[in-house]
Every structure is written in structure tokens, then in C-alpha cells.
Image 1 (cartoon, rainbow, N blue to C red):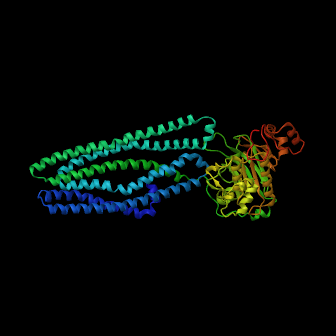
Image 2: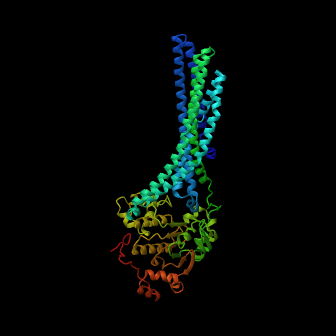
Image 3: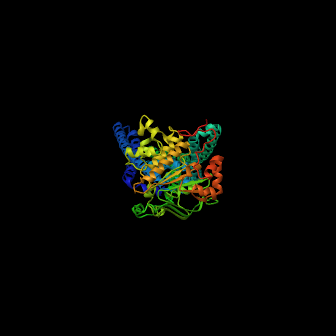
Length: 618
């Protein structure tokens, strides 16, 4: 908690100082009030002096008004500081999360990060607000009341002081057992967030498999576990107030008994007894509020630890470059320059039994096309993720345009290497706002050019608002094929040097897929990149038809490249590639390929290869 306070409190020091100072003035009036009441009883009520009674009444009213004014100022300062620091913490946390590599994001998990940015920061924010408003008031009021009581009468004050160690023991006993529960509560909130996210994002699959009842039960079980932990923590923390009240009320009873004896003996006035009881009541209430503050700060401490865990996490991929990469030399010798080079590239996920990519070596010249094909889990996506440094190779070298990717400034590298992921992700807004992600200064001509190359121009033009057509969260108002084409168009905006299509045409029919590949080849021939280099393309696909025209095809199996070369060469020398072709092509098509003739686009049984978004059952 103190680490966050030291880091983010700087801009709000004025509010942090002024707020408690105003609360301190209010407390001083609260401490003076019992003395004024005692004087009113002894000097005005006992003497039946109405004028004195009115004077003391006006004084009490004036003190109350002034106290309320200072309270309002304190509330304002607390709101400004807590909301400002909460916003700053949340912003820093979100910014840091976006700097983390895929490896760190995989470790924390999306639901946990969402809970930390929302719920955990809210707990810290609440603690800051209560700290400014109450952290000075109640402890100072408790101590001040005890001191004032001792000044009135030491003998009676000692009775209350004897109860203090017992109350302290109760605090320690309860809080020591509550802290683990509070940590568990936040972890179980992570679990609820995970189940909620899975259920909502996969609602179509849940309904398709009639798993609504299973998901409801899974959510209910997670909620019950969280509730059970919260109840256990609540039971423990709820003992604070009753036990504290019991101890304090017993002390007050002892004080009243002893005070009554003293009044009968003439050594104590009625006003002093009332003042003493008021001070004891203030102390009692103060300790109860302190107990509640302890609960709030304990929960905030657990949340702050989770926030600090993310903020202290060092990104595994750091921007190590000191100067931008000059592509002019590469452009001058574009005919011979290598766009991509992997030399023994290896990558392993944390705690994985085997590397996801192991000892892969390949080269691709500028303007060339690399096809990557293989079975599910063979390492295709991980391999291409090494090119824009979404992951860092754990061994070997990865070069783009003849420069090791670690020597590229990350921003420049990811502008040069544009990747279209497997899952087509769009954000709420418009088609235009989504396309401008790579280059906010791109004009409409560039956007339409990218849409045409991605085979999305026709359906976007058919929309009433065109580029300004609304996009719902995740692109839910578009079909799978339309979403894929829009994400491909977004990747083409800004004229990247390398385009990676990671199985991003799986929802396209064969005709549209072929047109897309032809358009990409046209961009390569036209050298449309801003550096003057021809576009280099990497196509990851399960379809032979998508990669067979590539200059080089990398066949992946269990993380290793078991075949590398053009289509004809792999047909002769790579058994796995022949098996993949045999599973997708007819015997006539295989014979035609073997004879060197171009094979027709394969058709899936029961599907049509006409223009559209997706193959549909006939």
C-alpha cells in the first residue's frame, strides 16, 4: 500500500495535507464539546441561569457549524485525492499491462488482470479516501478523549486505560486471521471473472451444445466458493465490534459506578461525570470505527499487493534498440536482400514439456511468399509470432530485413511487420476507426486500397455508411468472413514491409481466398511499401491451396520444420506434406500436380466455391 502511495501521491500532496488538517480542526471542536456541556450543566443548569444556558447553546451551535464546514472541505480533498490517485493507478496499470509480452500476459491471465484493474484498484481507492477522512479523526479523537478524561480525573481514567491492551489483543487476533481470507476472496473473484468471460464470449458455443445448465452450475459453484470465503472473513471481522463494545461498556459501567460514589461524596460534579461519560463514548465510537478502518485497510493491503505484483513485473521483451533501422540500404539491394531469416530459432513456453518451436532455420528474400503449414499444435502460430517479437526466441536468431529483431525499436518493427491473428478482433467504433489503428494519418484512398486488396471493398461499399459504418464490440455485427477481411485490410494500412496472415482466411471461400492471394502478390510486384521494398508475405494456413503457390513452404510438425521448399519439391521429398495434400486433393488433382499442371481449387464435399464469406453446406 505504501509503495503505491509513494509512487502516485505526489500530485495530490496538497489535498492529502489539507484534508486531514481540516479533519483535525473538527476533532478539536469535538473534544471541546464535552467541556462546554459540563460547564453548561454546572454553571447554567445548576444555577438556573437562562442567559448563560443560551450563551453556551449558541457556542455549541457555532462550533457545530464551523466543524461541518471543515468536514466538507475534508470530504472534497478526500474525493479529489482518492479519485485522482485511483485513476492514476488504474492508468499506470493498464499502460504497464500493454507493455507486457505475451509470456507475462499468459502468466497472469486476462480475468485476473481485469479484476486487478477494477476491483483491486477500487479497494485501494476506498482506503485512500477513508485514510484522508477518518485515519486522523478516529485515532486522534480516541487518544484526545482519553487524555481529556485523564485530565478530569486520573483515577477514573485508569479504568479505561486498563481496557486498552485487551482491545488491542482482539484487533491482533482477528486481523491476523482475516488477511488470508481477503487474499483468497480476490483470487476467487478472478475465478468468477474467468467463468463469466468464457460464458459470455462463448455464448454461441454454449447454446449450440446445450451447456447452459452446466455453465450456470459452474458459475454458481464459483460464486458459492467466493461467498463462503467472504462469509468466513465477515464472521471473524464481525466479532470486532461486539467484543469492543462489550469491553468498552464494561469500562463505562465501572466509571459510572465509581463516579457516582465520588459525586455522593462531594468530590465530583455532575457536569464532570457527564463530560467523562461523553469522552468515554467518543472513545468507544472511535475504537469501533478504527476497527472498521483496520478491516478496510487490510483488504486494501491485499489488493495493493496484487496491483504491485503486476507493476513490478518486468516485461520479458524490452525495447533495446537505441536508433531506428535504416531500410534504405535494404531497398537499394532489394533483389538480393533477405526479408526474413531464422537461424536455429527455438522457443519454449514456461513449464512446457517440450519446445513449441525447435531449431527452425529458413530464409526468404524481399517480395517473396512463405507458406507455413502443419497439423494443429505443430507450432505454426508460435513460429510467426517470433517475427514481430510477440515472443522472444529462447535460442537461435530471428532477423527481419537483415537486422536481428532485438535490434529493432519495437514500434518500428511492428510497423514494418504487420500480423493478422487467427482470431479476427475488431473493437467498437466504425470501420474507419478500426482501419486507422496502424496509421492514424491514412486518408480514405489508402483505406479503400487496403479494403480492395483484402476483398472487403465490395461489402463495405454496400453498407449505407460505408467507412463510417458502426462496428459492435468484437465485430459481432459482421460475419466471420467479413471480420477476417476487415482485419486483413487493417493490417495492410500503413504499407508494412512484411505481412503475416496467421490462418486469417479460414472463414473465406476458395474464390475469395484466391483473389486475396492474387492481390497480395500484386502488392509485392508493385513495391507498395513506404520504404520502396516489395511486400513480403507469410501465410499460415491449413489449406494446401493457400500455400502451394508460395516461393517457399515450411512444413511444421511438433515444433520442427520437417520440410522446406517449393510445392513441387515437397511433393517429392516430404512425406507429411504429401499426406496433407492427399487429404485435401482428389486423386485427379494429385495426379495433375504430380505431372506439373496447376491443380484446380479443391472443393469440400457439400460446399460451393462461389463468392461469399464462408463455405456453407449445399
